[in-house]
Length: 271
Image 1 (cartoon, one colour):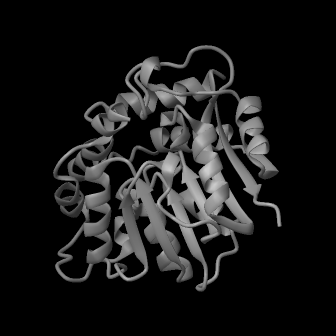
Image 2 (cartoon, rainbow, N blue to C red; image 1 turned 30 degrees about the horizontal axis):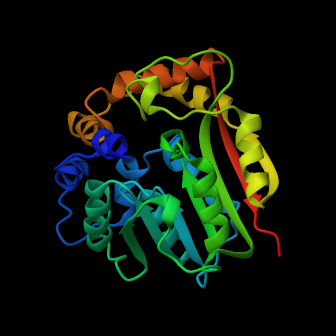
């Protein structure tokens, strides 16, 4: 697990992001102002909105975010639906940044972050009404353990939405956003991933291939002529690594060439 924390861990995350947010936001920061910088997964805010809509959340729900990063999706869920959210992440710098940003947005009473290993979730059985896990699986060697823990802490009939890049045909181009080399990457194919959920006891309701959506969005941005400001680019790099731009290009190339696919797996804990 030290490879994961060293890959993502970095100081100054909050300061960089706050510097990138337009305007003078002293004492008036909102969750929405952070969305360009804190949705650190494939298709970013668009994907968060799409997947959240599939959970049909209410204000009384308690949601688990596995691999919560710097807290963007968790804050989105709480701000949009009024639900409470617990995020878990292995990287101390992410957990600390999540807490600071959430307090600044006034969501500290409903969103809480825990430094924890997802193979040993620090929650009781049947605690959560729903769960998300966005683009974390590529860093997880023991996916079966994490999926089993998710099943344990979810209530009966609760849904989990899990997004992950999977092998589709050939070796992808490294470095990628989640790993410098294959040694730090734990990719599986679609059939293996589906089987892991079924073996754990989940009912697999849908597997959505989002590869085309990722590639289309990347091409649209590349052809738009819109260049990120130095501050915004700096915020992305401090969170995802100094080579973020190249890593992202390699990811899109791997998707375009059919070496990787991007999937959203929607599963349910049986009653």
